[in-house]
Image 1: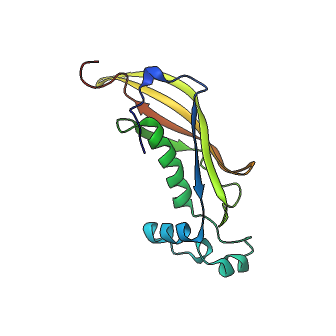
Image 2: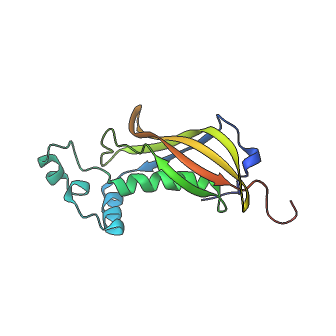
Length: 153
């Protein structure tokens, strides 16, 4: 949940994003399959997944990308926007029964000047981990933040 609107002027390189933990029980994988209509059995049927030489059923791309988006949206607030996600690469399985942690840091800040006014642009580096293992990323997420608050600022 977004607690407060983050403003561009309050962000510095090195600031942390997250961490947010996501438990991956069978139930979550089944609900994700229904929600995104990815009914590939490797994501919710343990016997089928192991028959394909996977160690167990594992989280889908949509579920993993959704976790990144949740962490970023919580961090940027309602008035922030996600411009781009780069380097989202699955390196290891996020297996059923594990707990995935998504976290990152600010790696860049700049102001873009445009016809519609100035925009605060922030670059984040994110990764998903299970234990010490990086399972997704590290990748880059480019976001925009308001330069200042709403009315009266």
